[in-house]
Length: 244
Figure 1 (cartoon, rainbow, N blue to C red):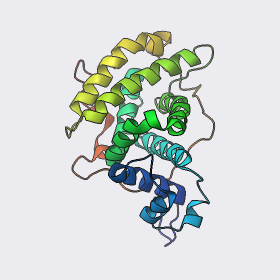
Figure 2 (cartoon, rainbow, N blue to C red):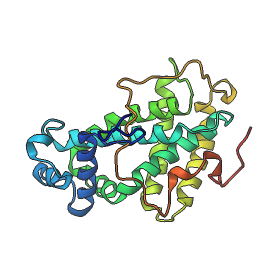
Figure 3 (spheres, one colour):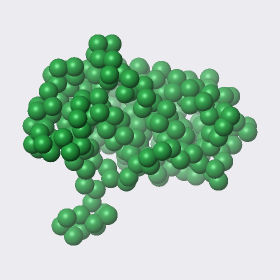
């Protein structure tokens, strides 16, 4: 990618991603249900007419945020070890998503608490979940062709949501409770997720609709944690070592 200044290798966030990130950050301070689009535009440093080029309502911004996090998740998983088992790759890609969400956790917590009073936003997140889970399988190089696709999407969605509830309350720097929960839930689910004795099928990857681009928007994760610097094998799985 060539940046505006002519240098290469610099990731520039799109305007839509900058808006989505600003909205979720602001939600952590002011709440989500009553967040005005004008305030989101001001937080993003753009005019309201510029915001209207990308979004027309808060639920649409929330869908844009989910897509942005999916791209970050996939970018972080690109360096995964090809020799890892499918289970290990699923573990790593889910943790990559939590790493990507970490700078926005205050906003995510606030939005989660308010979903019961915001049906439109709740519907958007429910509709985005199968897309996110499909990208998890794709990033883990696992095929989920029919007829098993609906079951595997549902099972992995349950694994993610159960772990997400732990992540919301896990303030430890190493996310140890989150990793332990994910490890436990994956152990229970692998008989349904693995297929073919847990072997992946690299030649038949799932390609969901609307493949994400490779742009990684700001802000980056906090420097103290530096999640992207960790190699996938560096994650300490609490129950058992990676299986070759």
